[in-house]
Image: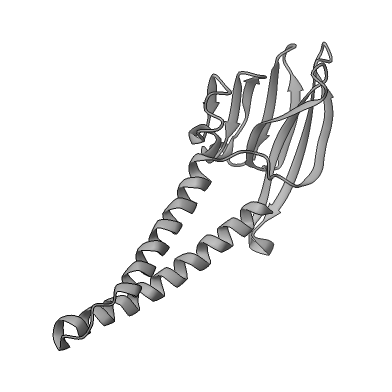
Length: 185
């Protein structure tokens, strides 16, 4: 939910900056044609707005974490063969009636004081299954059988690999060093 507020704040700053920039351009036109005073305050406000919008974009792209995920329980728990890990899947709708559903898988490290990590994030498809291949490898099936190009299934080695469909986790400076491999669509 915090990401939504950050996006709404960024959008409002962007719209305000565009409006101020348009007014600045008009005042600048009058400055050159009618020798009026240079619009310093509007220039400063426009540049400040542009910097804030750029900073918000950079923050959301390069400082991404899974900490703000809030959804409903979907599937699980699925314990690893040695019961070292427990996998649970969650979902969250987006976009109202015309939107879709995001699904993510959280791994609970049972031997590390219930440490929880998100290892998978994608659009949900009609067939979703989690199964352990061995003690450290989770196979996630997330596909739409009638549409083979929509297959988001993957095998992940826990603690070393993650998957984020849009790649935000892969380009995040905060998450890049935590995992050896980050997969994206």
